[in-house]
Image (cartoon, rainbow, N blue to C red):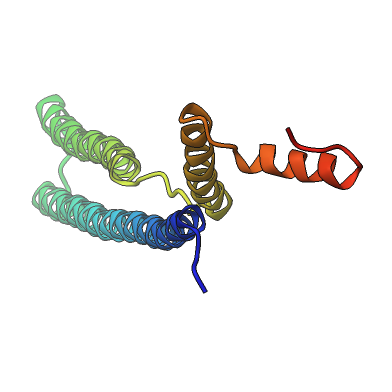
Length: 194
């Protein structure tokens, strides 16, 4: 049994298109897997950076709280010593001014600690925003394989091969398959081929 060359070419084209379809589908799946891995790495990186920033701000808050506590203890101790030393004596204007100066210094110190903590918190919030932006910039758009489009492309390739062969037949003066079918229809309906 002999297979006409046109049928063999179309069959080869179909087989080749099928293999290309499978390969393109696998490549698209691999690309989707890479995109998913990239997004997972970006998320993991962001989570680690979030944890690091949170640890850092907790440490700064604890340090600031400890400094405030130590300042309060130091101030109370100094006031207690001052009162014990001045016991039984009426506080003079200069003594009161000295005590007020000490209280003002303590208040300024605590206010300074609070301002510094507010600055640290503000920086912490900006760092979290930067981490989020970094994750977004490291993430990729995940595109799922479009099997229908790949299949349509493969079918189009086979059709292109078939119609290309038909065009070559027509250009060389041979009858195309369509013309042969039309001739058979005319022949079976009582018309004769000239």
